[in-house]
Image (cartoon, rainbow, N blue to C red; front, side, top):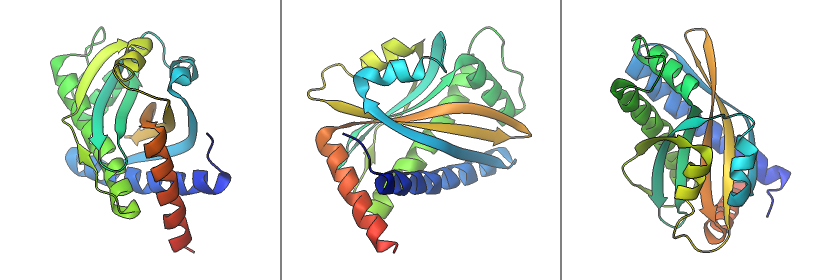
Length: 204
């Protein structure tokens, strides 16, 4: 299953709206201007997700994971390598990040950042596509990319697809790269695509 160019453009526009809202919330939280940019979006079967991300994410990753439910349901993740996660925490709080591990303070900050970004994007999906979306409490894990993919594949039936959103955080003259991943089953993906098409037609 692939997105058409029109569907891809509509999805990028929606994500940009969500990231704009997330950036506004993060700016209020930190007192500094925060920008979230969306260079590109790719879609692949979940079995290929680790292979797609592995060249950009080495060793353990910091992942904020949130389950969402409704007519469109699945898993949403914000994924950062540990270096980027530590630097992002330092930029957001002005507190030095420990160089060897993600400390407790960093865990709290990253979970809150993930919560803001994921909720803003998925909330935008719900509002503009006119579907109700509910969220679970987000949780942060430090693990290998393969373990992260495995954890969202357990006890789930059927083919699932991953929308991989390559995003850039810009704050205080620094730029860091992270990835937002939305994992959907076939039925939810089809509902999302149909809703995207309706929304895109309404914009004409």
